[in-house]
Image (cartoon, rainbow, N blue to C red; front, side, top):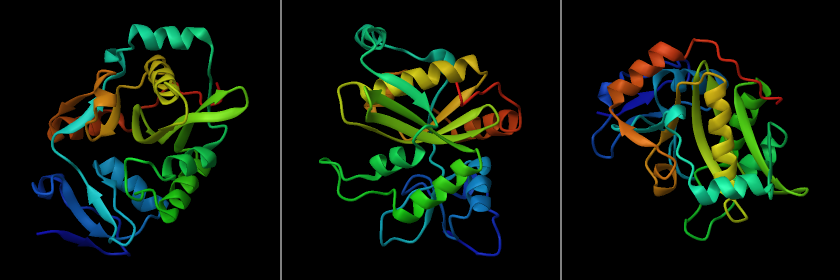
Length: 226
């Protein structure tokens, strides 16, 4: 039975109560307040819903993750990174990145990054929790991604690209920095061929939950001004 969240509580049901079909649907309702969002990520779930649907919370099993030390960068992408075609920055244009991630795409109907979601994650950015990666060609923003950093864990949310390999360059650069900063795991949520090419793989939800318990309160050496 699906749990409906109350607005006066940020508690989530145990992850084991998530539905098998659809895979990982844990709860519905509530709101996108910073307190609830932070409680969700710490618990092991995340919001994902379409415009017009109730707010839905998910914790799929298995969970797609990338261990920073397992990052794979293809020869062609490494060459692209060395060429200097793109310049990568952190936290320089968060709102532009999330708006670009929410923009219509030719292969998808609508977007799950609603205006309400954008405002919520911008608030988390102002709190120093949500971060963006920007990829520039000269002064033009051509790619990027955003997510949350909690302890030694990074929770990826979405990325976009307007030029060849732009988002790939941004993602690879981010992972290399996270590795150097002592991060242990990157949550990719759901599998894609794009992420698999970097070395992302599926782990059991219980294994993911253990990583949360171990690393989410451990300090990292992150420097998002770098």
